[in-house]
Length: 351
Image 1 (tube, rainbow, N blue to C red):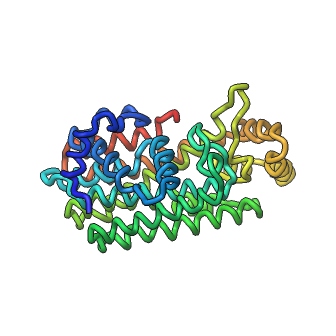
Image 2: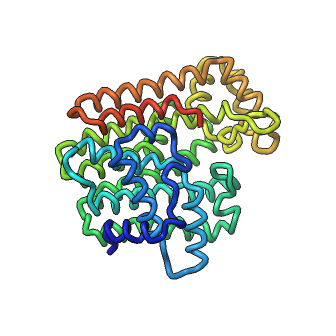
């Protein structure tokens, strides 16, 4: 079992290998309390060490994934939740191990998602299945899930088992519902919210819950979980909005969700604004977009013309308002204000 002090010593002895905690992180991280910024830096070293295996190939895949990390929203949520819940208590080994387990589950889910969706790119880089094979990607995702469970038992965090197992189940169920609905093309707003809650919001909620419980603030665990889920709902809706806004080098909409026949909120709302004939025509374009990308522009223009992005943005803002209302009930602290800033970042970000 790694001790955080041992990890910090290793880090100080290997400055040239130290990951940059700000790389890929949003500017809002600069406003975090110093304790959280230091914890995020230590976490990177702890996380990479935790991924080590006896397989050179697996280690190569894990390094490839770690080097192309995302914004680390979930680790930020864990540390901010822990500090906001118990400002006088320092982060402990359980905080770091719980954070690593959360990030492993998240990373495993996106590696598996890329295989399911046959995606060649992830954050502008080759996906694991594109860089190697789908077989290796599936095994890498399985390894990450197994390592998360090992960390929970290694650090004797059995009280975290329920927190962690729920997202594992929910994400799988959410993915299956989404696949089913990409075939039937009859996703309603209610089903959409269920999908994104299971696939995204539940794990961010678990991050906040882990933070509270790791600091001993069990009485705040449920509040923190709800804050995280509200942030997670807004985060995913914002991502789905981006799919209609982002363009490639030629100025054409990327439309990955359309290509994959994913019915997200901007499209679902827009389809409700038209008659059955036009709805049928647009759904036909969605079905054809996977083989002819010219239909992506038609679907995108339809969504823009029917205020799909405006509506989706308003829904995301409501989730953030709910999150901030709950955050406001916490005792005043720098971490509390950082949680508010992070919530606002989720809705205002441009990537």
